[in-house]
Length: 221
Image (cartoon, rainbow, N blue to C red; front, side, top):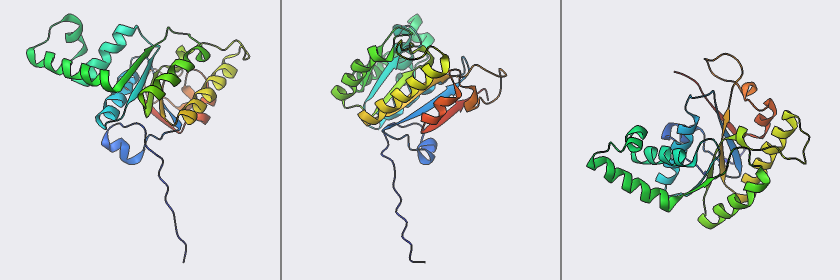
């Protein structure tokens, strides 16, 4: 009796499907992981995060290290336009497709800052450009594809666990200092080929789960 409950909601920085937004407000100043095994769809979910966030009128910084720059941009264009990626790549598009692609291109130009870094580029080399892009565009979210492509820091112990913990903690601090929602795509490559990957199957280390505000796992079916 006579107890007042004050419910505080985290400021949302990124958006996905309405059903997800209702139960998990992807928060600013925090890091959310998307974990999946190879070729299950984490890059597509990252693109979808960008699309739904832009649909809310917010801006996104998209950091790509996982694939060639042109391929990553075509995937984004496909997600934003609804035109299958293979049609765009082969030039087999209808008038309706081309109109949708133009509109998607304009949306991407206005609301998404795309940054490409070669795989294994260290975080200290990427951080200044990411910070500049977020501040310039006033983005509320960063989608980063992907964790395992971030290079080792020579100032940190060489073992995998120390490196992964250092990178994860640095990214968490980056999200907090910029007040953005950071969506980090990560590979799970241990265990059986099928079934839901657990946090302990994140390829880099179990410890990065400690820095995550939320973790999505993707698996077939």
